[in-house]
Amino acid sequence: MPKPLGQFALAKPATPPLASVLLTKPLSHGESTVKRRSLPVAAALAATAALLLTACGSSDDSSKANDEIAGADTGSEQESATPAARPSDTAQHPKVTLPKDVTNVFEGWKTGDATTDAVLADTSRRVDALTYAITQAEPDEPALGFYYKGDALLGAADWVQEFVKAKKSMTGETRYFKPTVDVYADGKATLTYCSFEGKAFVKDRKTGKAEKTPVTDDSYLLYSTRMEKNEKGVWQAAVLNSERGNGTCAP
Image (cartoon, rainbow, N blue to C red; front, side, top):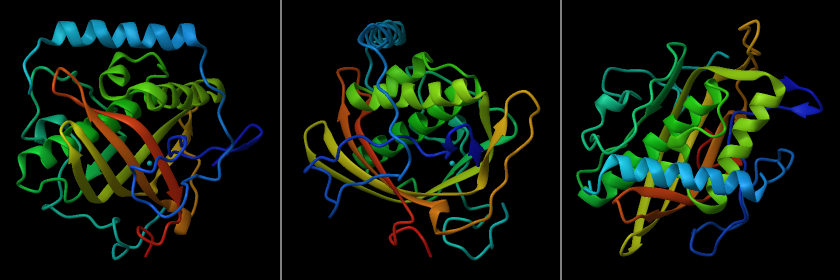
Protein backbone atom coordinates (compact mmCIF):
# COMPACT_ATOMS: atom_id res chain seq x y z
CA MET A 1 0.00 0.00 0.00
CA PRO A 2 2.31 2.76 -1.18
CA LYS A 3 2.32 6.27 0.14
CA PRO A 4 4.83 9.12 -0.09
CA LEU A 5 8.02 8.36 1.88
CA GLY A 6 7.19 4.84 2.94
CA GLN A 7 4.41 2.33 3.36
CA PHE A 8 0.88 3.12 4.42
CA ALA A 9 -0.79 0.51 6.61
CA LEU A 10 -4.31 0.47 7.94
CA ALA A 11 -3.47 -0.32 11.55
CA LYS A 12 -3.36 2.38 14.19
CA PRO A 13 -0.10 3.72 15.62
CA ALA A 14 1.19 2.04 18.76
CA THR A 15 1.79 3.70 22.10
CA PRO A 16 4.37 2.58 24.68
CA PRO A 17 3.53 -0.81 26.25
CA LEU A 18 2.31 -1.04 29.83
CA ALA A 19 3.01 -3.75 32.39
CA SER A 20 -0.73 -4.03 32.99
CA VAL A 21 -1.16 -5.36 29.46
CA LEU A 22 -0.08 -8.97 29.77
CA LEU A 23 2.12 -9.48 26.72
CA THR A 24 5.66 -10.81 26.58
CA LYS A 25 7.26 -8.02 24.53
CA PRO A 26 6.63 -4.45 23.39
CA LEU A 27 4.22 -4.20 20.49
CA SER A 28 4.97 -2.30 17.30
CA HIS A 29 3.69 -2.27 13.72
CA GLY A 30 7.16 -1.71 12.32
CA GLU A 31 5.69 1.44 10.82
CA SER A 32 7.25 4.89 10.98
CA THR A 33 6.61 6.87 14.15
CA VAL A 34 3.98 9.58 13.83
CA LYS A 35 4.57 12.94 15.47
CA ARG A 36 2.26 13.86 18.31
CA ARG A 37 -0.35 16.52 17.75
CA SER A 38 0.24 19.81 19.57
CA LEU A 39 -1.22 20.35 23.02
CA PRO A 40 -3.67 23.02 21.82
CA VAL A 41 -5.19 20.54 19.36
CA ALA A 42 -5.26 17.86 22.04
CA ALA A 43 -7.03 20.29 24.36
CA ALA A 44 -9.56 21.03 21.64
CA LEU A 45 -10.22 17.32 21.22
CA ALA A 46 -10.71 16.94 24.94
CA ALA A 47 -13.08 19.90 25.03
CA THR A 48 -15.08 18.49 22.12
CA ALA A 49 -15.30 15.14 23.87
CA ALA A 50 -16.48 16.80 27.06
CA LEU A 51 -19.22 18.66 25.19
CA LEU A 52 -20.31 15.43 23.52
CA LEU A 53 -20.44 13.61 26.84
CA THR A 54 -22.56 16.36 28.35
CA ALA A 55 -24.94 16.35 25.40
CA CYS A 56 -25.30 12.59 25.60
CA GLY A 57 -26.66 12.62 29.15
CA SER A 58 -25.52 11.01 32.38
CA SER A 59 -27.03 7.52 32.22
CA ASP A 60 -24.64 4.52 32.26
CA ASP A 61 -25.25 2.72 30.15
CA SER A 62 -8.10 -2.87 8.59
CA SER A 63 -6.69 -8.80 -1.72
CA LYS A 64 -8.04 -12.02 -1.89
CA ALA A 65 -8.16 -14.18 1.18
CA ASN A 66 -8.62 -17.93 1.38
CA ASP A 67 -11.95 -18.66 3.02
CA GLU A 68 -10.25 -21.07 5.43
CA ILE A 69 -7.81 -18.51 6.85
CA ALA A 70 -8.62 -17.67 10.47
CA GLY A 71 -10.54 -14.45 10.68
CA ALA A 72 -11.18 -14.37 6.94
CA ASP A 73 -14.28 -16.56 6.78
CA THR A 74 -17.74 -15.31 5.98
CA GLY A 75 -21.06 -16.61 7.22
CA SER A 76 -24.48 -15.64 8.44
CA GLU A 77 -23.51 -16.38 12.05
CA GLN A 78 -20.94 -13.58 12.15
CA GLU A 79 -21.78 -10.30 13.80
CA SER A 80 -22.32 -7.26 11.62
CA ALA A 81 -20.27 -4.10 12.11
CA THR A 82 -23.35 -1.93 12.10
CA PRO A 83 -24.11 -0.27 15.44
CA ALA A 84 -27.71 -1.50 15.31
CA ALA A 85 -26.47 -5.10 15.59
CA ARG A 86 -24.99 -4.54 19.03
CA PRO A 87 -27.35 -5.27 21.92
CA SER A 88 -25.82 -2.75 24.33
CA ASP A 89 -26.06 0.13 21.86
CA THR A 90 -27.92 3.06 23.40
CA ALA A 91 -28.83 6.66 22.63
CA GLN A 92 -25.95 7.81 24.86
CA HIS A 93 -23.39 6.69 22.28
CA PRO A 94 -22.63 8.74 19.17
CA LYS A 95 -23.76 7.09 15.96
CA VAL A 96 -21.46 6.74 13.00
CA THR A 97 -22.40 5.37 9.60
CA LEU A 98 -19.57 3.89 7.58
CA PRO A 99 -19.47 4.32 3.80
CA LYS A 100 -21.04 1.45 1.86
CA ASP A 101 -17.63 0.20 0.69
CA VAL A 102 -16.21 -0.07 4.22
CA THR A 103 -17.10 -2.81 6.70
CA ASN A 104 -15.86 -3.82 10.13
CA VAL A 105 -16.90 -7.31 11.22
CA PHE A 106 -16.57 -8.54 14.79
CA GLU A 107 -16.40 -12.30 15.43
CA GLY A 108 -17.00 -13.73 18.90
CA TRP A 109 -17.76 -10.28 20.27
CA LYS A 110 -20.47 -11.55 22.67
CA THR A 111 -19.77 -13.60 25.78
CA GLY A 112 -22.95 -13.37 27.87
CA ASP A 113 -21.12 -11.56 30.68
CA ALA A 114 -22.51 -8.04 31.07
CA THR A 115 -19.23 -6.30 31.95
CA THR A 116 -17.16 -8.11 29.35
CA ASP A 117 -19.76 -7.44 26.68
CA ALA A 118 -19.83 -3.75 27.61
CA VAL A 119 -16.03 -3.55 27.10
CA LEU A 120 -16.34 -5.30 23.75
CA ALA A 121 -19.30 -3.20 22.62
CA ASP A 122 -17.50 0.08 23.29
CA THR A 123 -14.35 -1.30 21.63
CA SER A 124 -16.25 -2.16 18.47
CA ARG A 125 -17.82 1.31 18.49
CA ARG A 126 -14.35 2.80 18.96
CA VAL A 127 -13.04 0.89 15.94
CA ASP A 128 -15.96 2.13 13.87
CA ALA A 129 -15.38 5.70 15.08
CA LEU A 130 -11.75 5.65 13.96
CA THR A 131 -12.66 4.09 10.61
CA TYR A 132 -15.32 6.74 10.14
CA ALA A 133 -12.87 9.55 10.97
CA ILE A 134 -10.43 8.19 8.37
CA THR A 135 -13.07 7.97 5.65
CA GLN A 136 -14.29 11.48 6.45
CA ALA A 137 -10.74 12.93 6.69
CA GLU A 138 -11.63 14.33 10.10
CA PRO A 139 -8.95 14.01 12.82
CA ASP A 140 -11.12 16.10 15.15
CA GLU A 141 -14.12 13.77 14.79
CA PRO A 142 -15.97 14.10 18.17
CA ALA A 143 -16.58 10.34 18.45
CA LEU A 144 -12.82 9.82 18.85
CA GLY A 145 -12.92 11.77 22.12
CA PHE A 146 -15.84 9.63 23.25
CA TYR A 147 -13.99 6.31 22.97
CA TYR A 148 -10.31 7.30 23.35
CA LYS A 149 -8.44 9.15 26.07
CA GLY A 150 -4.90 10.33 26.79
CA ASP A 151 -2.13 8.97 24.56
CA ALA A 152 -4.57 6.71 22.74
CA LEU A 153 -6.66 9.74 21.74
CA LEU A 154 -3.59 11.60 20.49
CA GLY A 155 -2.48 8.54 18.54
CA ALA A 156 -5.88 8.10 16.92
CA ALA A 157 -6.03 11.75 15.83
CA ASP A 158 -2.44 11.51 14.53
CA TRP A 159 -3.30 8.45 12.48
CA VAL A 160 -6.30 10.09 10.86
CA GLN A 161 -4.14 13.12 10.09
CA GLU A 162 -1.63 10.87 8.28
CA PHE A 163 -4.42 9.75 5.94
CA VAL A 164 -5.51 13.34 5.43
CA LYS A 165 -1.98 14.51 4.54
CA ALA A 166 -1.51 11.62 2.10
CA LYS A 167 -4.95 12.24 0.52
CA LYS A 168 -5.91 8.64 1.25
CA SER A 169 -8.97 6.89 2.61
CA MET A 170 -9.79 3.21 3.01
CA THR A 171 -12.08 0.59 1.53
CA GLY A 172 -12.96 -3.05 2.04
CA GLU A 173 -13.54 -5.28 5.04
CA THR A 174 -11.56 -5.67 8.27
CA ARG A 175 -12.34 -8.62 10.52
CA TYR A 176 -11.79 -8.54 14.29
CA PHE A 177 -11.65 -11.80 16.24
CA LYS A 178 -10.26 -13.68 19.28
CA PRO A 179 -11.11 -11.03 21.89
CA THR A 180 -9.92 -11.69 25.45
CA VAL A 181 -11.00 -9.36 28.25
CA ASP A 182 -9.56 -9.21 31.77
CA VAL A 183 -11.44 -6.89 34.14
CA TYR A 184 -8.71 -6.61 36.77
CA ALA A 185 -10.20 -3.79 38.87
CA ASP A 186 -13.36 -1.74 39.11
CA GLY A 187 -13.62 0.26 35.89
CA LYS A 188 -10.30 -1.07 34.54
CA ALA A 189 -9.66 -3.85 32.03
CA THR A 190 -7.18 -5.14 29.51
CA LEU A 191 -8.30 -6.39 26.12
CA THR A 192 -6.42 -8.28 23.44
CA TYR A 193 -7.87 -9.13 20.05
CA CYS A 194 -6.83 -9.93 16.48
CA SER A 195 -7.65 -8.39 13.13
CA PHE A 196 -7.40 -9.56 9.53
CA GLU A 197 -6.78 -6.76 7.00
CA GLY A 198 -6.38 -8.93 3.89
CA LYS A 199 -9.61 -7.58 2.44
CA ALA A 200 -9.07 -3.94 3.50
CA PHE A 201 -7.10 -1.48 1.40
CA VAL A 202 -5.95 2.10 1.30
CA LYS A 203 -7.54 4.03 -1.56
CA ASP A 204 -6.82 7.31 -3.26
CA ARG A 205 -9.28 9.89 -2.04
CA LYS A 206 -9.45 11.71 -5.40
CA THR A 207 -9.66 8.75 -7.80
CA GLY A 208 -11.27 6.22 -5.47
CA LYS A 209 -8.80 3.57 -6.67
CA ALA A 210 -7.90 0.88 -4.12
CA GLU A 211 -4.22 0.06 -3.63
CA LYS A 212 -4.57 -3.72 -3.37
CA THR A 213 -1.91 -5.89 -1.76
CA PRO A 214 -1.59 -9.68 -1.35
CA VAL A 215 -2.46 -11.51 1.86
CA THR A 216 0.58 -12.27 4.03
CA ASP A 217 1.22 -12.90 7.71
CA ASP A 218 1.38 -9.11 8.07
CA SER A 219 -2.30 -8.97 7.15
CA TYR A 220 -2.93 -10.22 10.69
CA LEU A 221 -2.50 -8.02 13.76
CA LEU A 222 -2.61 -8.52 17.50
CA TYR A 223 -3.98 -5.58 19.48
CA SER A 224 -3.50 -4.93 23.18
CA THR A 225 -5.55 -2.27 24.90
CA ARG A 226 -5.88 -0.87 28.39
CA MET A 227 -9.47 0.18 28.94
CA GLU A 228 -10.87 2.55 31.55
CA LYS A 229 -14.52 3.18 32.32
CA ASN A 230 -15.31 6.89 32.62
CA GLU A 231 -17.92 8.65 34.75
CA LYS A 232 -20.49 8.27 31.99
CA GLY A 233 -20.07 4.50 31.95
CA VAL A 234 -18.17 4.44 28.63
CA TRP A 235 -15.20 2.09 28.30
CA GLN A 236 -12.43 4.17 26.71
CA ALA A 237 -9.07 3.06 25.27
CA ALA A 238 -6.33 4.65 27.36
CA VAL A 239 -3.42 2.75 25.80
CA LEU A 240 -3.36 0.89 22.48
CA ASN A 241 -0.56 -1.28 21.10
CA SER A 242 -0.41 -3.55 18.07
CA GLU A 243 1.88 -6.01 16.36
CA ARG A 244 1.74 -7.25 12.76
CA GLY A 245 2.22 -10.94 11.94
CA ASN A 246 1.92 -12.11 15.53
CA GLY A 247 1.55 -15.90 15.67
CA THR A 248 -1.48 -15.58 17.95
CA CYS A 249 -3.47 -14.22 15.02
CA ALA A 250 -1.71 -15.39 11.85
CA PRO A 251 -2.48 -18.92 10.60
